[in-house]
Image 1 (cartoon, rainbow over the protein chains, first blue to last red):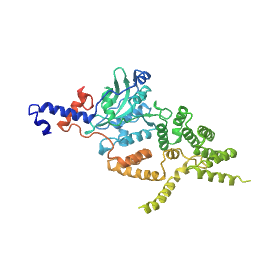
Image 2 (image 1 turned 90 degrees about the vertical axis):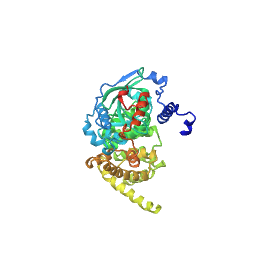
Image 3 (image 1 turned 135 degrees about the vertical axis):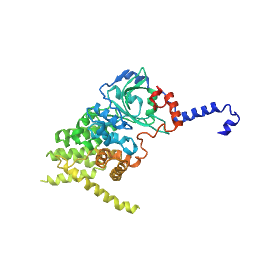
Image 4 (image 1 turned 135 degrees about the horizontal axis):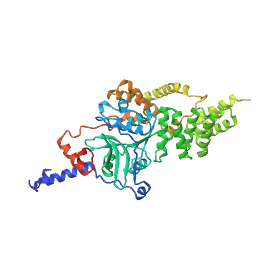
Length: 323
Length: 131
């Protein structure tokens, strides 16, 4: 530093210092620019969107996580008070809530948390579909972070403003650039919480499948059935989704429906061994021996982790039904 | 070490299978149990038995960590149960580094000045009075 200023003398030290400060700041923050939205994206979106039905819950000290959750759960039809949520999601020693537990708590209250893709356009898509979006921001700089959860409830494209329920302020307008800078520091983490049967506007099949499967693991197949149904309607040719639908129907005692779903799964992907296997198992349970034999032999012919199980079941079927 | 894992792995697999037996027994209307949805999803993302063992251990680990972070013992089990396998192993691996809450912003005057400037520049959103 001294080398830099020695030739300039003392008089010029102050502007140089300011310059250095600004440079450091730019290094620290990167540049906040208005997020780039392609003209096509702008065209496809309504110029304004605002979800009035999201109630506001003010946060108490540090407890933005529970407050954001309460708002997003209420929008999905689950009224849970912030006081109920605090012991479920808040980490007292960290004075905050971590992302996995935010998602887990949504699940506990019967809604499905879908992560959305970390892109500004994806966020606007959800808002245009009237889905409030829980976002994580770092309101401060990476060196002294101030992590924060808020709920985005609307936007105004011409004004370049996002509307957030945040902290103690309902319906606060923040310009796109500022929001984008603070959101980018959480790697653009965001999710929507939706009741089973509703799907996010974003069309990522793998993410949605995982989200519903995780929900099902906690809340059971009966609760997840409408979600599988909706996803199967949106992706008619996704074998995995048909398979999941079959399992959920079977768990609810609907053997016919389950077999139909497994058949659709193997129609979509004839080498999908677990679907053949499950179809065979239910068919043999139902006494449909021809179907069972065919399905199990198809499963047994496909290499993979289910082949040995399929062969066993095939043998068992033959010995049980030996003439 | 290798010998130890070779010895332990079958035991853990056995423990897992036995542990999941009550769940199997509780499945309604199932004379035979079908291949589950999650096991197919796991196979598609090539998550094998060894990962599964690690994830079971991860849940216990997370439970301990949450207790240490001040979560009440009556809540901790439900909180861990609500996590997906992937979330539980993320938490076990790096709960310490996960972003949560606020560090003490503005305790230093210099920090206050820097954030004031970045707030005015529209880079941060710390002091509402700058707008």
